[in-house]
Image 1 (tube, one colour):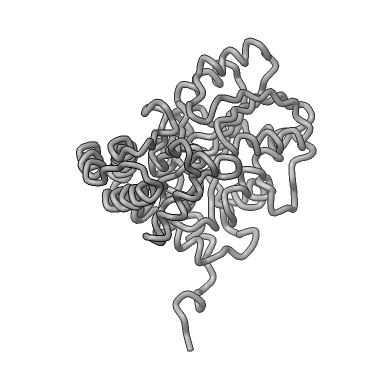
Image 2 (cartoon, rainbow, N blue to C red):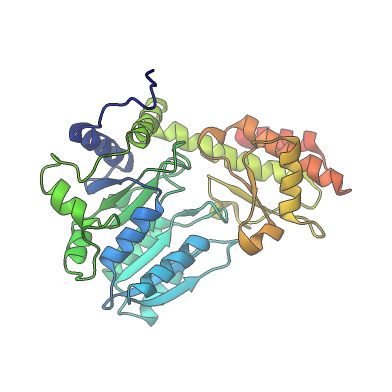
Length: 366
């Protein structure tokens, strides 16, 4: 008995390369693009281990948990790391980055997360990229959450290593990701004796055996389902238009933020300034005397499947996340989340106005 998801023909090198080209168009980049067969942590770690080592001095910007992870990897590689940490309710600024360069002029590597879905903030990459270019440092960017929700422009911003994933705003699976690599990033990797080779983490294997070979022979058998899903995501974005997809995410973010403020019950935006808030997720501070994870559990108990989550780790007590990305970047999804949160707050004896939240969300969406 045949099955459309099981009886798939092998993916050809030609089709694999064509999907890479579509990713390059999405990013408006002329850099090499490599699709990696795994969740985005694969190229995120692979890029750091390839480009950083004992001779590296890195500025690692921390605006959420992923920045903390990048600092750990950099130190494990033997790099000297200077962390620039800002409160999770805000974003880093280009001036703060320049101050770090002035204090440590030897910095030659900068790691940054564009949008932190886990904390709901987004960072001004274009302005930071200017500062990094002035410094002459290699620029590494995690754009996994932001791609599809806001502009991601490696060439225009001077990003040397830009990692994306399909599972957030692109609306696809978590099992496939991609990275764009500049020529000077390749050179830095080639000069690093500790860069992974003959390894699943190795980007140099792809450079030497795939790109330099004219993209004729794949390193291993591609995961067809994930590749076809990535292709479908790209087709859907191209069909709708990237600007329209980004506008839908921006509308959902405005609606969630405005609706939560109108809902009442003591619910407040976690990210203080709307300009610092990511379009993929709106984070909210749970009212005093409540526990965020308990409110989310109550809300999901009445409406299973809503894109609601509590913050991770210690943030589970205070942070609620409305994850309006991909197929959930819709007015209906925001309305449903606000209504469910209203029910959870009312169950705690707090006064809420779901109708006012809905009106505010609609006004903000428009």
